Image 1 (cartoon, helix red, strand yellow):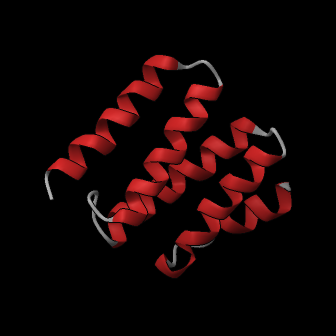
Image 2 (cartoon, rainbow, N blue to C red):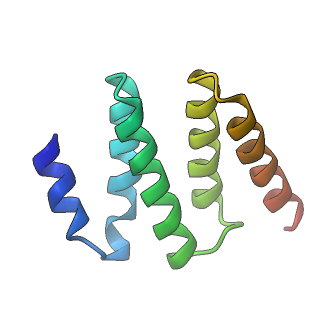
Length: 92
């Protein structure tokens, strides 16, 4: 796990954005929630750079991050992320 994360830290290619999101999903399945949050945050930052904050792929990551926060009982953070996704969707 650490080796994969270290290698991903060296990657800045926007074509690898999906890998960060997929790793976040995998870490959630493994109950490695701190690692999942890091990967979701990285995926979100990369997607916003490559696409924009309103793109459906970006909003998928925002939603998954919201769910992660909700499942960790971080309800304030979850609400902020859900609201962010809703606001971005309304701007379309």
